[in-house]
Length: 143
View 1 (tube, one colour):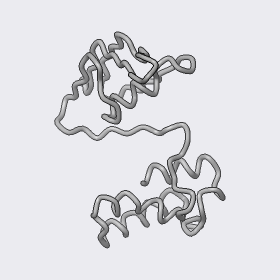
View 2 (tube, rainbow, N blue to C red):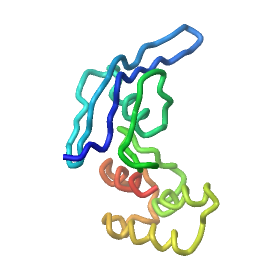
View 3 (cartoon, rainbow, N blue to C red):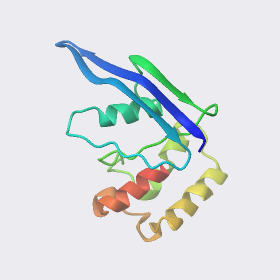
View 4 (cartoon, one colour):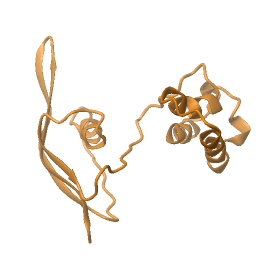
């Protein structure tokens, strides 16, 4: 199988006014195409921090993350949704393109297509508070 990602001796230290917190220490893994990976462990052991570093949301203190191709697309689903409660489902799906100044008809059409294909068409004018947790996660996948 083809290796698509390699993580070697990953380490993350968070700094705050109380000092340092070691969140991840000496984490290594090779991920091959088609692999299904689960990060399992108790609360606070660094699972979310590893995913944040892998996706580029959080910087790496030490270690190396390498991908087999340039500019890979990475994403992960957070435990809690990140929807704006005052925006409709449709509004939440379009917020990213609006903030990036790419608010055009093609992207609006594509977002509407995704809303429909994710089974959310009947809820597009609703606020997030009226959706189930699973439905909120589907909206999060779009925006």
